[in-house]
Image (tube, rainbow, N blue to C red; front, side, top):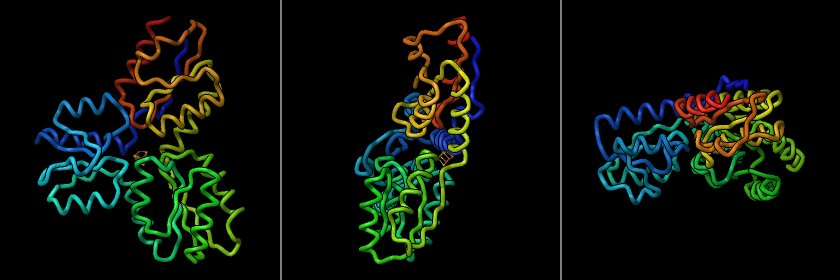
Length: 286
Ligand code: SF4
């Protein structure tokens, strides 16, 4: 069996920063709260919870005068206001690349209708939208373009500023931009700022190339991780034998042969140790 592991497997710089900083603060204090999953990986969450992090799903579950981690995806503006009122200290671990997008939106929102191309229920998109004011919309598919066009007409703005969720599909972003340009009035000034993270784009390109030349592809990552699911989708288009696994345990249901060329890729929230365990397991087979 030949195994080829993608060069861009595993933690991106934003997730790496978030985890290291969380470990740093947890080494000094217990009971630091985190709103939502710090990253989309069960093992990482469990290990931080063992060190004193408490995951909650609502700001109301965070006690007054405590400390709250804001994860790499960022958070809605209201959380920062609520925390201030209740003397909750914010440890803001929002990825720097997402903070740049929020600043750009704040600069644009007086003169532009803001469009975020991304998944409507992704925490990063929800957080980003909260900075964009009333004249804004999320576009995830074609139907959203028509709804957004109606909202744009009502706003009477003649300029549109478009950004993206940082882990959105690069191919789908380009397709939606073409459709937006076809639907919107030709007098609208459309400014496209493709804010898909460079790491995400490179990883999507790498999985495309790798999955084109192997017999089987193993994509490692959380099943609720947006960037991992996108990698699995790209891979499946090229390689029918593509499998999304969370840990080496999930490999036990897959039949491998000694002749297989196996490609490996992992999402941005997959720790190196899980990738190594998968490779070690495959190496024991043949
Ligand atoms: S994918 Fe990019 S933008 Fe998102 S957390 Fe990682 S480094 Fe930051």
